[in-house]
Length: 139
Image (cartoon, rainbow, N blue to C red; front, side, top):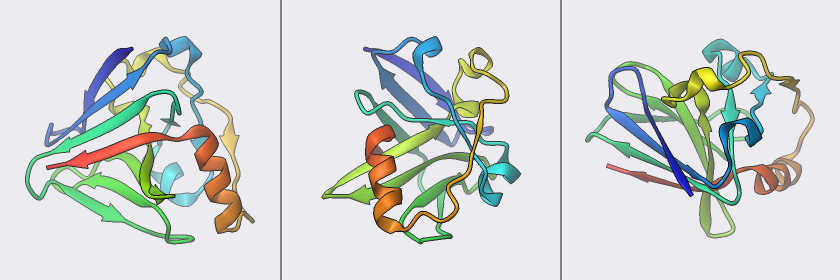
């Protein structure tokens, strides 16, 4: 397993993506929702890995929209979208915005745009279980 570090713009939110995959093997996506498009997000998850978000006290803001089942994590100081966490079956799973990783330039700058309109809660959770990874958020 390799730990890929990263952070928000100001450094108040630190990220540790842990994966056995090399960057070229990671599935990077772009969601077509207005939130992700406005933030220019490129996200990834690795069900065999994990992501940990470490924050300074009061440095993370959670935002929910759409189906209201996911916390989108933003740095409360610099406004950067760092990733998302969803509670599912008694555990937290999440994704990381690869733009926050130190290796960000390794990834495709414009991966395919994914449209998830029309998903209900069950379909959205099932898709995320397939691609998201164990996630923790600690202050």
